[in-house]
Amino acid sequence: MPKPLMRIPYTGPLPPPRIIPQDATTVSGAVTALLRFLTAESSFSLSSRSRTQEQQPSPSTVVLTGAGISVASGLADYRGANGTYVQNKSYRPTYFHEFVRDHEARKRYWARSFLGWTILDGARPNATHWALKRLGEMGLESLSRLNPAWAAFLAEVVSSGALQTENPEEKRARGLKTNPDGDVDLPDAPYTTFRYPACPSCLAKSPLLLEGEQSRVDVDADGAWLASSTAGILKPGVVMFGESISEGVKLAAERAVDDASRILVIGTSLATYSAWRLVRRAKERRMPIGILNLGGVRGEEGFFQDLPVDQKGDVGVRLEMAADQILPLLLEELQKTNMSRL
Image 1: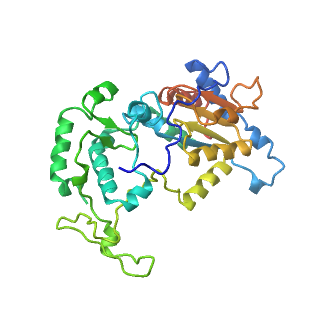
Image 2: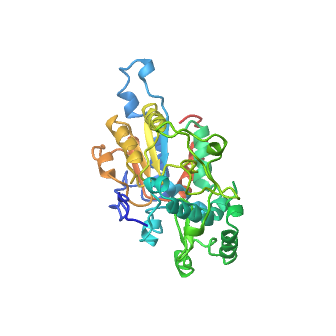
Image 3: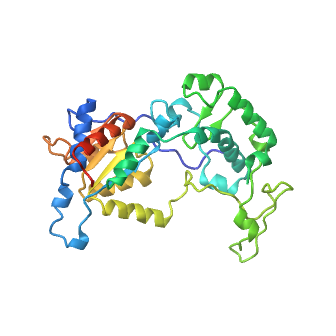
């Protein structure tokens, strides 16, 4: 695989956080601070009262989450204590430019995803997901058929138990490396033999090329995409490393921040610019910011640098605890106070 043209940001450890408020180092203190953060009348709303009614932000919280909230479901994260960049120093994702240009890169991508699918398929929502759902209600073609040899290989891996353990040492002993995107690395895996289907829409109606010529989508007898094609690449519905977020998604995310009165970040180090810029946007709008994350967060010192020293979470909170431990307790407290709107 050729050397990538871009680096993955912040693969090393980020500086440890400063807990805000200072007494939020215990579970009870953290829940109390987060409760105050979510229920206090936002200083941002107070400073906005000179605006017209149409310009006023709603008294709501926008939540920004990352891979960290799914660790308790058995999925890997990127930068946590047992994250991919810690446990798998040689890990590198398939970059967008590689995926769209290189048939061999696509084979590697789909093969790793094929092996890792059983992990994703077996994962279930954890306490964080259910708590966020409740808080939100309160206002907040077959690869196995194309690759019979790989299907047998996957069955062998599954029967060994290698995909069921979350112990990093056990995974290493079995030569297995799982990644946050749900894919799996295995040493000496014959990625080049993997086949993947063509885009079904392009098969039904081949698109025009930029030059105006009709494209060609070639498949083998089983329907696998062939390198002689000039179109028809099947891409998953995810934003890959090096790929830009669509303008519609970008604007929708910005509107979500602009329409809220505070932002709460959960389970992400904000290492990617697209996530970090949303919190920076909230900071520029002088919105209260809350962060619940194990480990450091990109640029977090700037988000909290001018908080009143005596505030107890009303205008800012930084907690370093597991979300699946804190959020269910927070939900209990909110229900005790009969809060119906956040």
